Image (cartoon, rainbow, N blue to C red; front, side, top):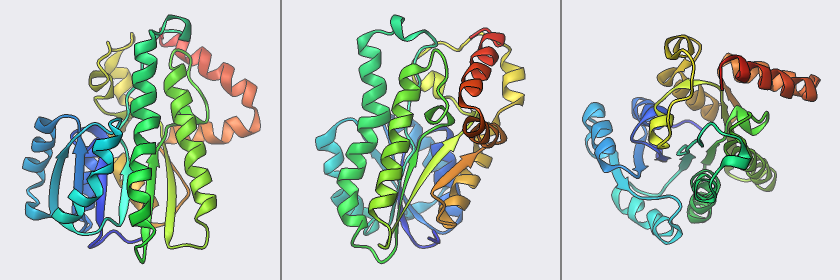
Length: 265
């Protein structure tokens, strides 16, 4: 689906990949509804974008089902009928084993990463199915197909997003709705701070040199959407591990564990 002149909803639009998706969509001629928990960061996005009435801001929690169900009507009133939804918002967990995770932390990761996208899909899917051409995009993670130690619940929720997206893809074959699952590798964002957790140990400069800049990640995602790809792999690490886990899944799990241990995580 070409994005020019389409109305696109982006969750987590106040920072990171979400902010860059907003910028990229506007450059491609779309009208954008940006949703985030933090209105201040949304306003920063708008100030940088200078998009006028092509960008509408909505403060809200995607885990709040009643609030999410009210969004389609509000967004249509501001921008017109929604043609695409990008479920981008997400959080990670503290870098600790599952046995040490507090139940409240588990609930938050599940609410934001899995329940949130489910709420958004239930709210917007009926409208998307009426459009002549529409697209649903769910951002999972390479952790969704190859889990990471000390990110057990993050990986579990992202695996759930991947499976849900693939099921929706099957259910909408032959319709006007296209479905994509985005699986980024390491991307330069502030997800750690936004998740309210401490940075993991290691050399931050060395780590940054191995991660993909957020604007490049957003470009890859939007190119994949316009090409109607089911799986959009973002970064050389995601592409490499996608192949590796199919060839030798047990070896891939041990490889990731050793790499995390070397990094002191």
